[in-house]
Image 1: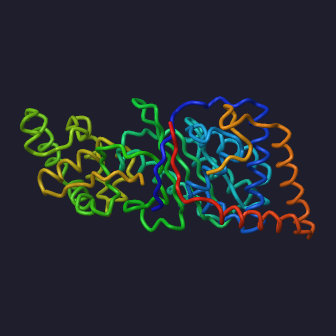
Image 2: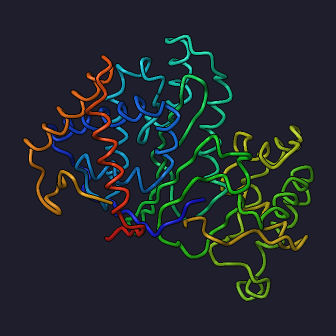
Image 3: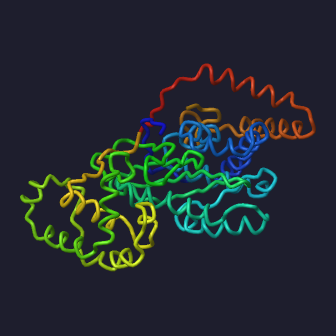
Amino acid sequence: MRTGIANLPLHGHHCPRWLFDRMVKLSSAIVEAVVEEYGPGEVLKRFSDPFWFQALGCVVGFDWHSSGLTTVLCGALKEGLRSKQQALGLYLAGGKAMASRKTPLEIEEYAERYALQINVGSLQYASRMSAKVDSAAIQDGYQIYHHVFAFTADGRWAVVQQGMDQSSGWARRYHWLGDEVDTFIQEPHAAVCGQPAGEVLNMVAGESANARDASLYLAGRPAEVVSVLKKLSGLSAERLKVLDLPAVHPVPQAGRIEKTLARLYDIQPSSYERLLAVAGVGPATVRAFALVSEVVYNTGASRNDPVRYSFAHGGKDGHPFPVNQQDYDRSITMLENALRRAKTGDRSKMEALKRLSVISNYNKTASCTYYK
């Protein structure tokens, strides 16, 4: 998993319409140029790279240090590529808040509309599990509120999703690349961007393997889980400290999860991934299993946090300098002309852009820090 120190404050979301319209044109032209040169699969790889994704947001003019970069950039890309998706073989589903919940339906609609030969169920599962891992299997204090699922006509996929810590006003971004996901329950991310959050429950860490096995074992023994939870709920704070349980790992109310435990007992999931995929299994159930596993079987879950540029047109908030509309329009025109010429066989401008990118890559530094 790629690492980097990065945190995104939740402000600066307002984007003037004139700028958003240009973001739509420029961001989609850049993605179209990547597809023209390397194919749609390369776009998925770049979406999963937090440095490239952040740089793209900076180039198109959004706040380099704001969570809005993620939501507005994805919205601009989805709008700009809407009419070009079939030609590019690249599709974007989901979005912010309620739009994220429409992702499975959008995947199905794309498949039907464009007669895509893809496994719709498999892509829907990938979308649902990536969201569930980052909202339930990893409990870092960030609530997922943005989920964009990108996929190609041959069924490859990537996810860019973002969570919010309402108490601190910071956001955290999670990147996934389907080609690198061997399993959803052990180190599945391409990258997680954010500052370390302190105490977390990380059930997809490698060192949580025993805790996952114990949780699966307990899924078939609901009475034992409820019994232990009820006993723990009656202990004093001093006794809980003796058990060395982190403050962020509260004892859930046993009665609230009994229905979920009964459902799991009926289903008898064969793996931790299938357990996590069951409807109704959320943060409370995951914590309950992890807690009982730790207390009864001494299989402690990981507490390690999984979190591990460039200005071309300025920023919409005036930093580091205001966006110049003429410069922005010239960049859009240059890219669109290069793409048109490339499609007619004249690749001179595209080759010039490639040479420019080589020079840029040679000179750029490797550090990446977001400032509040």
